Length: 99
Image (cartoon, rainbow, N blue to C red; front, side):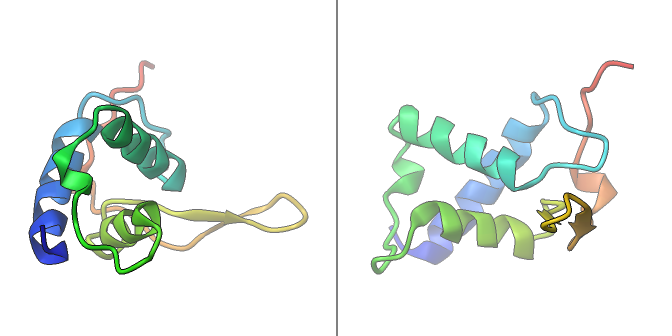
């Protein structure tokens, strides 16, 4: 499968998957994308059968989710402070966190 085909299908799968997850108030992060990837991997999903040209498939998928604004990625500084690098489009994410 070509990356362009896989990208569209994975974004669609992510949109379905994220609706059933408990997400931090700041939105889904790289940790969530890693969980998503591991679930695809554990299920033996054919969505992971795309050409990676030797690159790490999780990094590719993570990049797709970032560029499609599906993630709110945070990076931690050595002092433990969080630096937000991207915000999520609110229309794409529904939080199922219980208040």
